[in-house]
Image 1 (cartoon, rainbow, N blue to C red):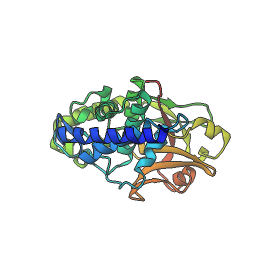
Image 2: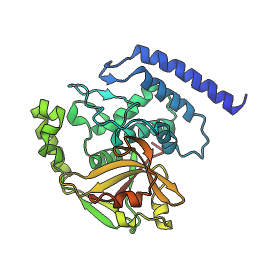
Image 3: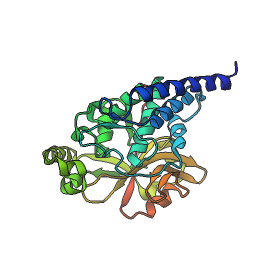
Image 4: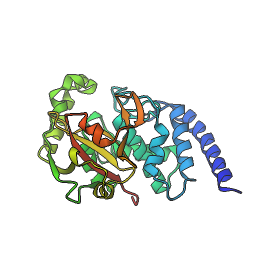
Length: 296
């Protein structure tokens, strides 16, 4: 039996299981929210991953499956009580990164069921992988990086110097200063002190990053940043740490960003290089690089 036929049989079997899974565990079951379409797509992608060559870049393999999906913000803000929300049809920059990272980790660990995916997604989205309430979700990406690094899930790349020649010192207070802009904080004032405590814990932390003028097309950059790395764009906006997220894609003309784009209103591989992209945004200062660990 050829590899292609075997792969198709695996995918067909996974889709059949996904339909049963979706019918048995529909939205709002055990504080998990998803649609039948979501579970089928996740199982199909994981089944496909079982058949890809070892040379395939797994994060980009999954990320490119979402090209063209609409950009929609606030897709996690559905319920008053915190739910693990799965939405593969509409994505923002954070949910794209988490969705792809969860699929990637499943593939690395050879775990191919929808239940496996839910477990991994929860481990990524919440502090220590434990979902309690809104405050257990990791709202700042620097917090996300530190928490997932402590769990052994990711590695933040911060050398050599250069290109990691700049240092970001955090001064985090955006959510605590704009509580009315957040549905859960407006509805639950008791969450505000918890969020402010988390912000205080982040403030003062320092991280090395690549200044945007150094994001060039050269051997040093190509050695420091790999295809499929998570790119976190640092910024100078008051109270924030990271302005935008995506995945690294190297082309002949340089580094590009695969992201859920508010500008393009969908998931795209940016046609312009990341260097040009960063120059067009005065508040962007550079990039931090995060790599999903293969051996966890």
